[in-house]
Amino acid sequence: MLGPQEEDRLDWEVRSFVYVRLVERGLPPTTEQASAGLGIEPEQARAAYERLHARHALFLDPETREVRMAFPYSGIPTPFRVHSKGRSYWANCAWDMLGIPAAFHSDADVEAEYAEDGSPARLSVEDGRLRSEGSGFVHFPLPLRHWYEDLVFT
Amino acid sequence: MPRGEALTLRKTWELSKAWYDDRLSPSFRGRTAEEAATILGRLGLRGAFWRPYDP
Image 1: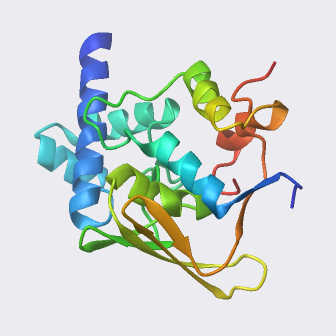
Image 2 (image 1 turned 90 degrees about the vertical axis):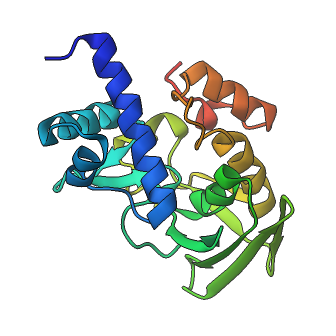
């Protein structure tokens, strides 16, 4: 049984592991992989994922309790694909597709779709500047304070 | 679909840089609602829609 401080330290260690592995491989690790990678019990990894979900540091799939979102990255395929640093990643939404090059501080090419008609959208980030073919908008349907009530919809 | 708000791609890029700048830092520990409000406010994103907490 860990005390609150040890638990907190473990949570952020697990969170770091999730991001490092995700950046390396394009998808977040499962709780089993986190357990093996960090040398902790599977139950400890599962509990850390749950606590990180509760503090909005990760978002877990409602059924599998594996990482669905490690903002701005997605743990499942989405219409937002980002190519950066020699690897490809899924972003959670139109905002997060730009969040990935922002988090990397790196150039990126983005493939997405316009919500209104599903037509392809191509964007890129070069030397910190956004380049896009069109002048699109990003829709934020819910007020910020309600985002975590339904993140998939948001 | 709720009406919500729309930002230009350019504004969204500015928001992304401010919001996700430190996300891959090993020392990242999340942020408080007040810190989030400060980031948004610097970009001119104020008012009820962008407030990260209930008034």
